[in-house]
Image 1 (tube, rainbow, N blue to C red):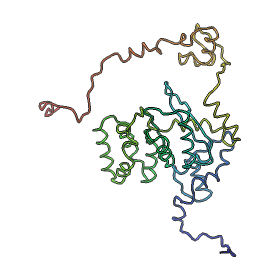
Image 2 (image 1 turned 180 degrees about the horizontal axis):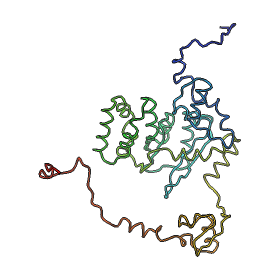
Image 3 (image 1 turned 30 degrees about the horizontal axis):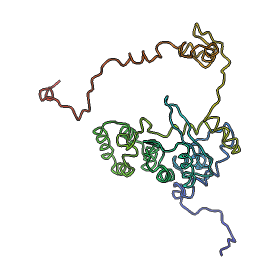
Image 4 (image 1 turned 90 degrees about the vertical axis):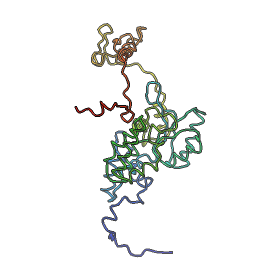
Length: 336
């Protein structure tokens, strides 16, 4: 047993040592320190604000990624998808005490009970180890892609530079293998360590071209972050209130829009949206529905599928990738 009899409140560690990204500043501990920041409905405490607070109050230099994880602690886990119109649709949510192996595995199991076995199922998230582990246990046949934005943040933080942002973006979004390898070799020429780091992640995780499943144009997990942002008003409330709030976001009830005076014939509304956007505002939709008029009737023809098709009816001949061009010698040697 040890007993402290005298305490000298003087720091003997060097300033540069104390200023590093302190390992003891775990997301769970920091979340406990900052939880009051999210107690009010009007709080909008960002990860950048957490970094500033921790440096000001405790002298800790915290990475953006760690601050972002601190904000997520003790909140809720959620899974969202996109509907046919590319709008956010929340599938399931759960309240947990922290983001760990057990909580994510529990959530994934409940999610599977909800959606069952889905063919060609794909997930896009950050590279949190608890998510990766839970997917391997529960959705072992599903495809898992990494959010490229989080990879860029990791590269920026790990290598203390943001010069690779555009290069990684190009590698992530290209459809051409030759363009990808050309851009990736540019990264390798600039910094071998960065290229090795990206290779160790696995191209199939962050490059759309090499993804084993189908992720369409979903390259980031920002849809989930957007949903989290809409639920920030519920933070700090009782769990029952939080659940009720989340349900209202998942299954919002229909309501009649009021507050606008509509002229369907002139296609105007006092709110200004109808005549400005040339598209029915909520008030115009309510007025049209009340009069048994289709809500699409007041729309100008420019919004119709016929106009959309006519926009692209012209033929555009493909050029192909420059590496695949077969240029005749007389053209190749021509001086312009």
